Amino acid sequence: MTLDGKVALVTGASGGIGRAVCRRLARDGARIVAHYNSRGEAAEALVAELDGGGHSTVGADLRDPAAVEAMVAAAVDRTGRLDVLVNNAGIYAHHPPLEVSYEAWQEHWQRTLETNLLGPAWAAWCAARAMVRQGEGGRIVNVGSRGAFRGEPDAPAYGASKAGLHAMSQSLAVALAPHRIAVFAVAPGFVETAMARPYMTGELGEAIRRQSPLGRVATADDVAYWVACLAAPDAVFATGAIVDVNGASYLRT
Image 1 (cartoon, rainbow, N blue to C red):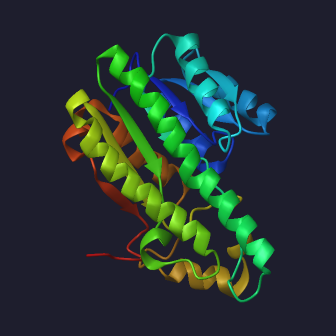
Image 2 (cartoon, rainbow, N blue to C red):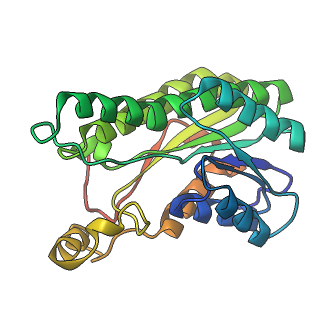
Image 3 (cartoon, one colour):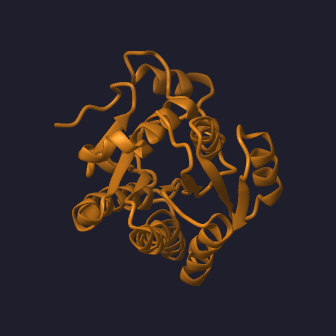
């Protein structure tokens, strides 16, 4: 796979999956614009260690449509183009319906949907227009979740947001195909990141690992590999695909 000369904007770049995606895409030749919300120093440290050159960072609160528009514009202004958008940023919060107050329930839903679904929608709208203006096609890869299919009883807003992200990916795949913009989603299960760490110790962690016949959860590099595959020029005819990266821990038909 080669992405030589391509520019990739990766949201949530300072997190575990985001860092792995940036490293993989840079290794494949892409110039990276690494997005962060509050962890600017971590994003700067990341771009300093990436293969190649011309990498940069951009800050934005993805819940703010104006900030997302400015983020995409900054990426294009800085590099002269945008070829790949990876909507990776996301949050997960515990909010079982019978254990939280009505006020907390509303807060979790609003914050999760704004971050996990609306932010990617704003970014995709802006990125698609930049790609159309270039006239060379492009790629949008959304990081979804196994939870969109099997449900998330302790975090229903998370499951709903990822299901919406998958549906958005497929809708955009149809809408943008005439412009040679391919849109995909990857759907990991548990991944060895800071977000999953509280669940990965003791008996609970062992039970989670046993969900896969491989006896482990995904690494961030496992996810990054598939993001890179889908971002590659030859992947265009798979547009609309949702790729499960869960080690056969959940199989859907």
